[in-house]
Amino acid sequence: MGGTFALLLLSACAVGPDFKAPLAPAAAGYTPEAHPAATASVSVAGGDSQKFEPGRDIPGEWWKVFHSKDMNGLIDQALQANPSLQAAQAALWQAKENLYAQRGKLFPTLSANGSATREQFAPAEFGEGGSPFIFNLFEATVNVSYAPDVWGGQRRQVEAEAALAEYQRFELEATYLTLTSNVVTAAVAEASLRGQIAATLDIIKVESDQLDVVRQQFNVGAATKTDVLTQESEVATTQATLPPLQKQLEQQRHVLLALIGRFPNAALNDHFTLASLRLPAALPLSLPSQLVEQRPDVRAAQAQLHQASAQIGVAIAARLPQFTLTGEYGAAGSTVANLFSPSTIVWTAAASGTQTLFDGFTLLHQERAAKAAYDEAEAQYRNTVLGAFQNVADALRALQLDAATLKAQAAALRAASATLDLARGQYRLGAIAYVTLLNSQRTYAQARLALVQAQAARFADTAALFQALGGGWWNRIDVETNPLSPEDRGVTTTTDLVAGARGVAVEPKQ
Image (cartoon, rainbow, N blue to C red; front, side, top):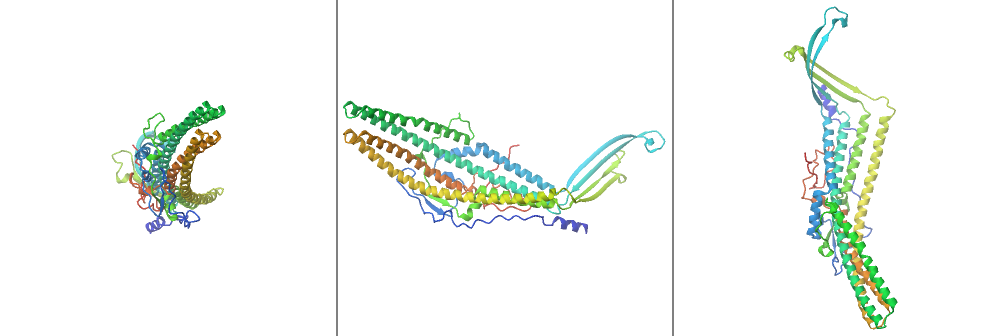
C-alpha cells in the first residue's frame, strides 16, 4: 500500500504551466505588397539580375554561393580559431553539465560512512564507582536520503536547465552565423575599398593628364594662371582622398585577421576584389511561417521563454509541503572482527515533512516574480520575432533598390565619361571655358566611386539576406550532430529542432 502511494506521488503532474511553443506569426509576407520576382540588371560586375525563389531551402555553407576560394578558406580558419565561437561552445557544454547535475537531484543520495573510535570511559560520570576503562568502537554504515519530487519542483528545475542548455545551443548557432556573416561582410568591404582605391588612382591619372593640358594651354595663352592653379588643387585634393581609403583597407584587413583568431602583425595572403566574387543568380526566400524556426535568435528567445515558464513551477512547488526520506543501515562493534555479526547490526528509517507557515510572504513574492519574468521573456520573444521580420524586409528592400541604384550609377558613369571626353576635346580647341571642364571632371570622379560602392552593396545585400533568413544552420554537415538529444532537454522536452539540425559544439579537451 505504501509503495503504491509513493508511486502515485512520483508520477503526479508537476505544478505550474506546461510550456507550449508560441505559434508562428500569421503574417503572409515581409512587405505590404508582393515583392518583385527578380531584381534589375546591368552589364557591369555585380550587376546580374537575382530572382527570388520562395520556399527554397538555404544551404548550410551559404557563403559558397559567392564562389570565392579565398573567402571559403578564411571562414574555415575562423570556425577553427575564433575565440567568440570557442567561448560559445564552452558555454553550451557548461549548460549541458549543469543540466546533468540538476537531473541527478531526482535520484536518492547514497553515501557510505566508516569510523573508528578509541575512548576512555569513567563510571564516575554516571555516579558509579570503579576504575576507568578503555574501549574501542568501530562503525560502518550506508546512508540513503531522498526527497520525493511530489509537486514536480525538481522536474521543473530540470526543465529550466534543459531550456537554458537549448538557449546556449542556439546562442552558439547565432555566434556561428554572425561570425560567418562578418567574414563575408569584411571580405566585401575589402573588395569595395580596393575598387575605390583603384578608381581613385585612375581619377588622379585623368586629372594629372588634364593638368598637363591646362599648362600647355597656359603656355600658349589660351588659359589663365588661375586655371592652372585650380587644376593643381583638384589633383592634390583627389590625392588626399587616397590615404584615408588605404587606412580603411588596412583596418579591414585587421578585422579579418581578428575574425580568424590571428594578431594584426600576421600575414594575410588573401586579397579580395569585386571581380573575384560572383553574385548568385537565385536567392532563397523562406516562408514567413518558417522564419521563427530558422532564426537562431528567435529560437534562443523561445528557450528563454521556456525557462521562465518552468521557473514558475519551481516557485509554486516551493510553497507546498516538502518531504524527505532517510535511512541508515550498518554495524557497530568493539572489534573489526565482529563488526558484521548479526548482533552488531544497526539501522534507522525516518520520514519528515515541512511546510512553511510564515516567511514574510517571501515565497509568494518569488512566485509572482517568476510570473513577471515569464511576461518579460514573452515580450522579449515577440520583440525578437518582430526584429527578425524587419531584418528580412530590410534585406529584400536593399536587394531591390540597390540593384536599381547600380543600374542608375552605371548609366550615370557612362554619361559622365562621355561628357568628360567631349569636354576635354572642346577645351583643347578653346570651345569651352575651364570651369565647364572642371565640372565634368568632378562629375566623373563622383560617378566612378559611386559605381564601385553600388557594386559592393549588391554583394553585402546578398549576405544580409542569408543572415536574416537564419543561415541554413540546420543543413550543415561540417560539424557533429545536434549535441542536445531529446533526453538532454529534460523531463518536459522543449520543442523539436528543425529536422536534420546540426550543432557546432565539440567535446572540451580534458
